[in-house]
Image 1 (cartoon, helix red, strand yellow):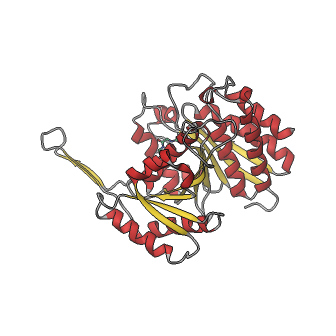
Image 2 (cartoon, helix red, strand yellow):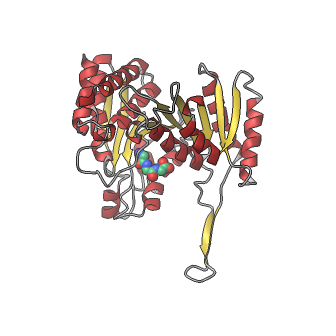
Length: 359
Ligand code: GGG
């Protein structure tokens, strides 16, 4: 990281509403740097988008890694435009490449009940909702091991393996236990399905149990993923740190924010904790083709992701200031977007955060 507090950032809006929420987050960052005395050198990146694919037949230029590996962080919007590029091609050609090539093995996804945001579970939930989903981000169910045989015949057979390595499993569990150990409640929940997925998931459980021995202060439990999804809806206040494999973590980190009111406010960090490569920060939501181009997307997930990015860069005061401004703006109905029952558009919502920041 830079000693004179100048950080080089690649801004990668991607597709759909990514193109709307990323500039909104950049404007908030700009307001923050003026106030906190650091500088972000932001380079706009037009690849990792389906537009780029249409023009070049691939999601990113061949030398994308060389172009980005010296950056301090990546700010990402969303990927996917299924009308022109199949989703598995756009995702694997961009986000999955970043996560794997930059070894961003932690996907960190906070879930918090925010002021002014009504949870659909409000009548049922007693207590706060404030937990973090830690998703394994480089292996697991997202694997390229498999194939299609006898294509187009009655014998058509499709196979895809789940890959759990000892290194990959232990490092995500260590990260999750460390995180739980540093939080007041010191509680960890593991997502499993070892009754049905009877080879990889018992192994996951075994590694959780082994890792737990190193963290006697942390209480822990495990739920099968089906029951865990139900528990998110029935009693989300019970959670503190929830750790899951790539697929389970992905599902839970959409479900969690939906339980707190909207996925539109949820952020995510794709992190290389060892800092060998740039980490990537993005809203949890995707490109949302149904509302893209209308200017009505909620930019809070992208703004919160930008705050996580500053925290990762060591600018924790600025990161906290953004979150205070987000809370202030969300408390005022006039600055909330439509998914939250307000009337503000994407730019207006970001303006309100900037006003709160400058107040
Ligand atoms: N900003 C997140 C995004 O664009 N997500 C698209 C998506 O399909 N994500 C699946 C994943 O994160 O594995």
